[in-house]
Image (cartoon, rainbow over all chains, first blue to last red; front, side, top):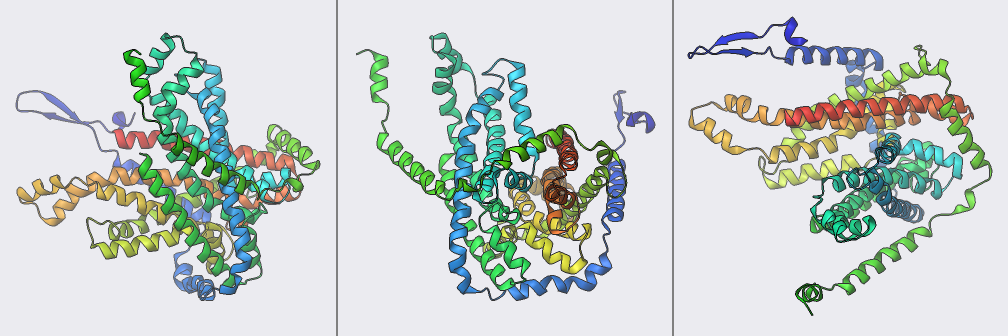
Length: 271
Length: 268
């Protein structure tokens, strides 16, 4: 299509061969991106002058956060633990629930297009919803509190780990699986003996990675009432008590850093 | 005892190790289960779940398709615009930071300090940035753009660094050997190696930013989040349904397109 509007340049090589040099697509892509930028600036009311004039306002809050209110720590401790527990439980159950779903989604194990399709659609539908939105829905269904947050994290982990796991299962070489089936093992037994040992390190590493991210997500789930440290964050922001917010963010940064370091160590060991 | 049985018997037995790990995981599980209180569940929850599902299947079509400033279609386009502009700002800001934290380009201490700075930017939740930017710009999509831009920096820089550290330096050496200037080395030796990786990373982040932009509305930073929470608090489930349907369809389409583009960029 593009080549017909802008015909490719013809080059004749010294040996008489004719080579077509296609016109570069970069100008068209650039034009499209430029159009997108102009449209987005129009839609979002982007205003550089305002930014240059008022950027100092951004640091007003930062300024009030320092120094953080150290005494706030006692109130933070329990919600912080709640946040970690929420993400731990959600990630654990989600990663476990991902195994059967991934089993049904992988086309080399279950040879039924309808079952594969259903499992995959389920995974991608769950993945599309931002976890804050699913937490919002969960608070309406399960009431305010940590349970709603756990459900949101469970659903996110299920979809994320499930997708990566079924892709790994599909990439496993099938020889040992087939050999075991030919020996008379059932499909379940062969899956357990041939596939699981191969995907296990990757699966555990994905689950750990997901847990890392979940701690970060769980911190804001409280914003919609789904339990954890986000409730305090919401309160502090609502009352403009920015020193407490600073303390919460400080504690959160340390926690996330510790969890990331530990989990990164284990992930490196696994692979 | 035949050969196979002997092999089986010789297999390493790490029962204590497995038992130990299982104990730890079970302990963590029990510990974490203490946080969950199921008292909050009411019978009305089931009815609400039912209305949400029925709302998704019978969405408010008028709202879904109308293109005035209240319609879902307009809000979705606004969300895309926020994510697009934010990704662009973030990816431009991330480039110098990425070069500053690549340990094969700058000295180790500078790289370490930049990395710490990036970790700190990454830990502050997007909603907090949103509130800070609202002070600068007032509520609206502009605040959303700036928030998305700032929050993308952390991950973008981290992924950029991986690409930079994997640069094939032998190309640069051969360019030096045929007498290229520094500028030519950057133009023909470095940029072609990095650009497709960087573009692919940007498109990946755009995918994530679209989801983030859709929740920023909760703090008043534009996009589709605010109408969603208003509709839920008012128990207007048909409206909730139409917003969710719009969001799901949009994200699925964007994910599909971005996967196609990225595999084209990387595999040529």
